[in-house]
Length: 338
Image (cartoon, rainbow, N blue to C red; front, side, top):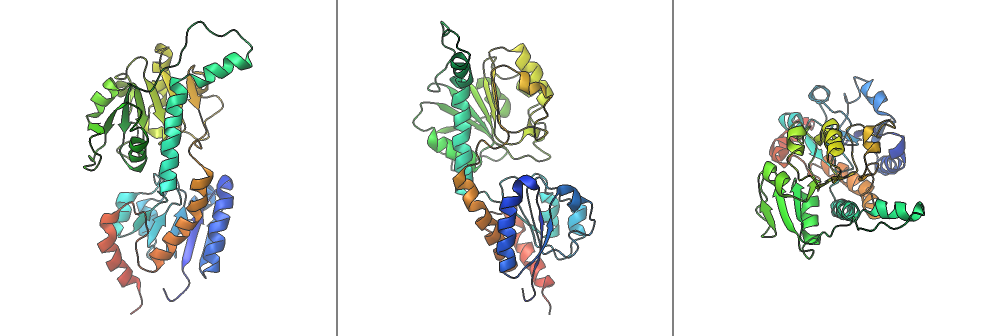
């Protein structure tokens, strides 16, 4: 571009350090930054994207078809993180706009490791063992810990995180089942592809690894949850809206042998009065269990690089809607002055 680009950023207080770094780099590169420090301030400005070339925002930021239709210069919507659930990706594709994210190897591998961590902590009753020590109570006569070896692990969704988990679990002696709307032909013989209902019925451990969109919201409703084994372990490191939390609470109260580990919730932060907090054998972490020093260190640079590539007319490294690229290039050509 021959003139400075206008980059709209949308953050919130907890994300300020990262967005400060990205905005400083973009300003140094000569771009104009329109920074919205809260989601409310962005949503309250109907002209926020009117002159924007790029929107750089956390993936839960609402970016609707209407907003993008009123942004004639908008080239891309970029999340520095993995999630893009707030972006209307179908509308972006229709309009010739790229959607990109920060699905780096460090991010995927951190989430894979942390998902396995939660599986093991639930199976081995880590919190229960801690409670014995901290409560200065006698050791129980019978162990409540279970081995992972010999278990069936179900992976709902098979993207980069599930692939990294498959690699890491190769030596654990587990049976891996996978369900996804698109079968990965490169998954290899370690993974058996099954229907969602069969996965839920057969798995000792169920891991939710899907992105959140119109097709996955509420996917694990009460009927599906009840297909799980009475003593199954349910781990969600994806998005809370995929699981019907009210149904999960009812089920957990009925099944004392069930174990749950959740890093994400339908409402975040998790309300203080949420009944999830009172469930026994439940591990709850505040959507940060897989946020490592290594994954956070690379995200600002990847986001700034994505902006630079878009403005140079090249797709970023991590594009959510690659099918739009030919149309996107034609749209860019039309945006350039003759």
